[in-house]
Image (cartoon, rainbow, N blue to C red; front, side):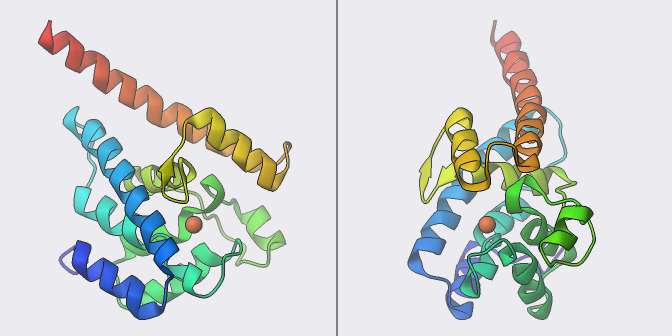
Length: 185
Ligand SMILES: [Fe+2]
């Protein structure tokens, strides 16, 4: 992936497409948290591309230059494709919304009827970190879950998807942390 934008280039793209300062600050905070998660996961042998996480964190909300609605992921994906960004990055942008959207829900929302579910570690990390950053502040999982429930309703399937994402990432993080502790003792 040699056409992966670096930090400066990604920020220049956000400005060029017209993202607000608020969106850019949110993206920076998501990137910071995502890189922290990615580095820990990587330190224990999981294959995570840090440059991709950085570019994905910065560009995940690219579509917010056009809409703040649920379609901003899909629209961001279209913009990324137009800009010639690599497919793994387009996938991060497209699949970060609501801890992922399955085909059936996507169709109901007026999106193409295909899965927008994060698949790779880089995609999962960004979808997860995005939920844990409120504007530009990191909040904990329980608070983020409450926030999601407030905005989508307490029975929305996105809540279950967010829980699953949390479980998967924390299990791997805890494993990473406990083996680090073992190494030290
Ligand atoms: Fe977003």
